[in-house]
Image 1 (cartoon, rainbow, N blue to C red):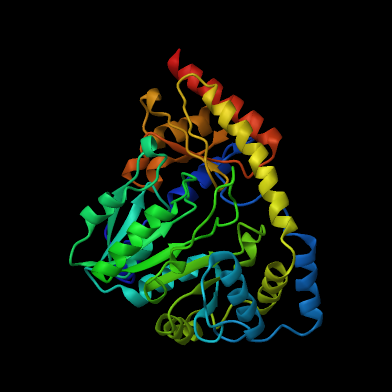
Image 2 (tube, rainbow, N blue to C red):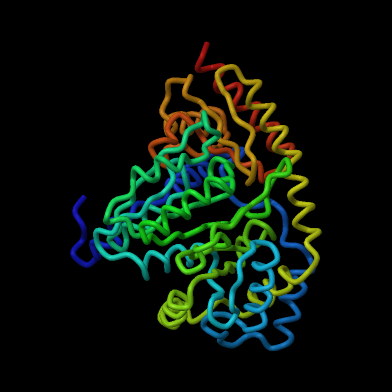
Length: 390
């Protein structure tokens, strides 16, 4: 299909989200068990909702500051110092965004010129559209199940050229649940410093960790503060996906650009959502620990249930609320397998190839749903795989 002459080539070339395509397929199937949804099934905790209600009564209904309310930025600076080891000036190096997605978008907007190369992990979250929108060239670096999907720094080094402008890392990782340990991050940092490369560190799952694993922010490592844009969100930790509020810590020059263009994009993050965010970050984190404890129980069910299916194998995710089972023995592509499951067995998963070429042969399954839905969904997957193998 040719581009209509009233659409820009830049935006028309952006592909539709594969996840959204799967959601649309699932919505057409009555009684489907949807294990593709990448958001918590919990309600936003009551104390956060109450803070938003109080904010309305207190008159937070007008334009907010472009880079966020000062008291929220101060609390964010305290949080990233205590939890992430990052020193940030709340007036110069902190910016409140419309979720972490805006941070990713703005990073590509502010850093990339046509032809600049961006290293991304494969399989990994889909950053391709944002990169290409601003003329950048994605350079995938494969990770492998045999290494629990942890990137080999040597593969990153091999991908660096004189055109490399940015590396995007996502740890804890969507869709694999992998965590990059300090040795891996130190190697990445050394390469970024050596070759003068920016790093976008996308950290939405920083709190959803299992088995004593620890999250490390690359921005806290020596020499990285001046070249790291750290993206955070309240969506996953606090079940606030619909509130659309996140934040970034970055050098002042980047924050200034984000603030400058916020006026031309959305003016600012919704005032009420910011007051809810202030309450969430400021309060004791019991609600987060309770949700993670529930995810941990569900993870065990998913891990055991998937590995009990003849023809399916799955490593135990170290973090997030995703499993990434290997379905290559079915001899179907990940797209064909996902379409088969949703149409013939009424269970929705996400094709692994959506997350890159190295994701072929896998599917992503979310355990941010109830135990009952998980049990039923895994049973349906089992019946589907058995029918293929019979």
